Length: 147
Image (cartoon, rainbow, N blue to C red; front, side):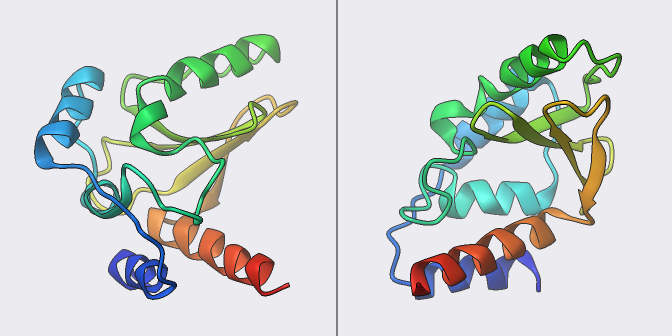
């Protein structure tokens, strides 16, 4: 599934998602001095501010974006990991302080998603793209809300 279909599915659930304007997206790029991939920009445009019930409690929205890299570096330091985030690595997601995910902004289209779990010594590719990351998150969310 592509990212547009996944975002439409979130809207079809009736959630009141809210995106960011281009000025805020450019401010994120300027803050980190990177050019964000198109799919991530689409995510930010559609639901960069809130996903309502989707991704609730996850650190991936605008209110946390400028802090996520610091969280990731703290986790790496706490684990005494030899891995270091490079300038082009963009941390876009964190979960409960023991997981973070990032992509490499030097790959312009559909970069793979790297995951770091507390206790791992280095991140591993978990998803082939942001689309597949969001698709799995949405599938799991739908299973959870159907219970």
